[in-house]
Length: 331
Image (cartoon, rainbow, N blue to C red):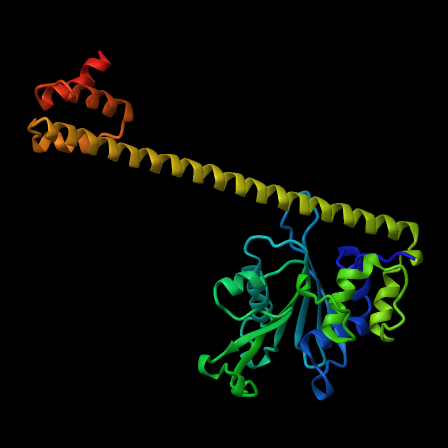
């Protein structure tokens, strides 16, 4: 028995884009909605898939839905940490909020928008947070607008928050080693480990978790479904290769620019040292250096010219003889 990767575009949509009860459980787990706050019904909305890499697998996919109250949810799987990812998430969520109204409609018709991003990478790496002496961001984090002084542990239950546009991020690489029992962590475990399984774990709770894994069982795929899955996998690998190539290009460019800057700085420092040495030799020999001549020496950045001046300074009778070496060398 082999299970498909739930992070795959085709599989993600096969499971969460066509089975509302499974998607509803995912939403409730990721948003920690229980009791009266639980989402009890969802309706799918038209979904968009925005291209990031021309000719390669799109690393962005989403499933959109709304609940009975009209609140909208955008669930997105992001496989590659592309530049501007967070900006795009915020832009799309705010756009989804603003696009609810037609011209002239009252603002009271607006309903909440929740953007949920499942990331196959670390958005806020622990090492980076530690280096900045900031709190670590947990595997599942939720964000909203709040007044600054109210965002304290003793005031977390305060209702003075702006919840119209909310964000949730599930960073899969932060999954603990121990297999979770339920909730968002169990979904993360399935996203990470499904391709490694050879059977459905006995301790996997019944309901949406098992149903999702059963839908990923390749033994239940038709030949066309297998081909669609493999094609999506190939395209994902193309996107990863493209991202790795761009990262390598950026690294190479950075190294080249760093070397160029280092060489330039080294030459500049070397020129300054040679100019100081020349002035020291002239001073030791009692040769007067005019303001104009000193300015010319300090301004010279050509090490070969400075070397000729230093050699001439050992025997020349005046600073004019020393600086005349440049004219002779060019003749």
